Image (spheres, rainbow, N blue to C red):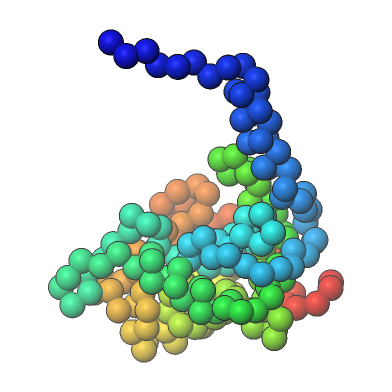
Length: 191
């Protein structure tokens, strides 16, 4: 039977130090702080800016496993939603105003209102094109009119035969009343 080598304690300590140091690259932000930089799209509603994970406020997009039927064929729209977010922010500097911070897995996630250097609301861009839905429990219907327009035109997720595969409930689960939204977007610029 072959022997499995055991990592020397110094190598193991160095590896743990590197992993712990990686988390230190992300700066600690608080409510009201601005995060600005070139974004890297993670999925349809997450960006990384300078090692900081940002969850775009007020919208929801399908998770990787979500699917729907379009023209009677199964479709997984998560990748297309991420591509749409890339188009919204492509080549632009993005600024995000943090309204809450929460730990997700091994990193902090900043729930934030985001806009591009030319003043484009990133959530607006996604909902208007039909690639995100208004996350009503958190947005209090902020993007609802844009969602209705995209739905009426059959854009993006609304081309699903059975509607978009996004999660449409709050922290208390399906059918429970929404919690009271705690944030109203204020748009570009210091506030």
